Length: 130
Image 1: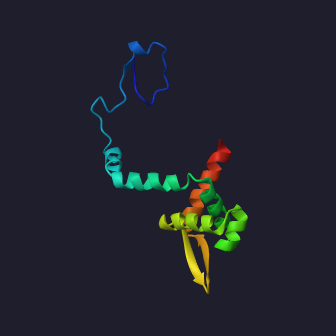
Image 2: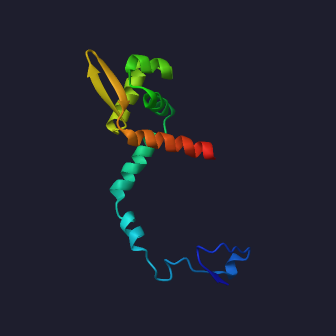
Image 3: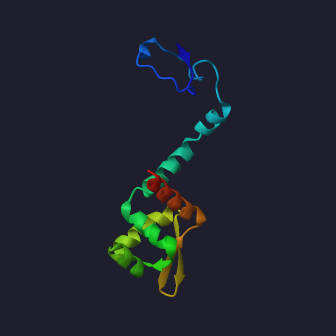
């Protein structure tokens, strides 16, 4: 029996199936190859997802999604010390997920742009969908 990847046929006798998924038969999708050549972009994306892998940083981003805030007030919402919040904000700022604006002696933090809001919203939508 011979079938391709986009067919939904299944067999319990896999050793008797001749599997032709396209790549091995000589067909190569140039668009896929083009997108697979940029390891630098893959590394940057993996690092971005690592930053989202910390619960504290997610809490900070969720608060800042609603309102810009100084470290003092933000620390109350996430129930952490100001120094711990400052450390996490530094990580988020380096990743260009948040930005700070100095007003007098205080710095008010907000999400860097609408892309960050979209990432948070899409993540929440995805977990609510599961």
